[in-house]
Length: 289
Image 1: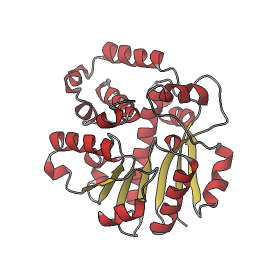
Image 2: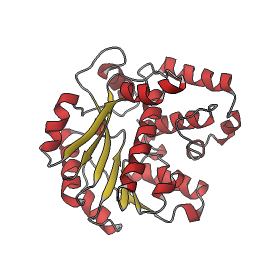
Image 3: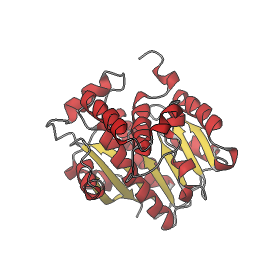
Image 4: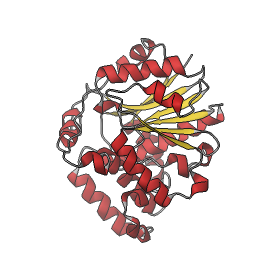
């Protein structure tokens, strides 16, 4: 899509929009992301916070237009990944890598991440657009721990770029959210191998993936069609029953995996919410033995 890269990834914008809507909705919320609206240039909508009818109408409109549950997926995986990241840092991780960082604001909004180096890795054009937003909206005192690393995972080598930015072989938490479906198998394999070979024992890789086996309503074909239409076709996926063996083949251990549906039951249903979520989206943690 002409101009898409210059404006930043369309899928990154969808995710930031979902986070913005979660932040302006009345409580209870799964999280608060004060930068999502700013990074999208939609600060004027933040006074809507607390206006339940307005928030519900916006969410219903998005869910009708995109019935694959992408808004719900983005919201629920944000909460799960936030929790798992805090857990990994509490267990001794000394640095964070955000692979395909997009418009993610975790490095600026999560206190646990402010105490360690954070490496934001992304496509050069997407990252350039992100840096403009960060420098405009995040105070300098809240971004000194962040290093930007421009890499195209489809053709560039990750390790030299990270090392040049100060990355160390140490206990690390790597967040790889919403990226694997848009890479080919070789790129995903290479990144798994990089993690296994360049982080210390006890490191964790938190990532999302699609179940290519399920194809009911809101399944693979629907999701793939949605993002192909905006110029970001899906090219990689795994079946959940293949995941353990796949990771073992890369010298990694599966720590946990859950579907967005299961995550919704755990986080949304107890607070009386039944947001639409897709049936094929999964979140997992792999570990370095």
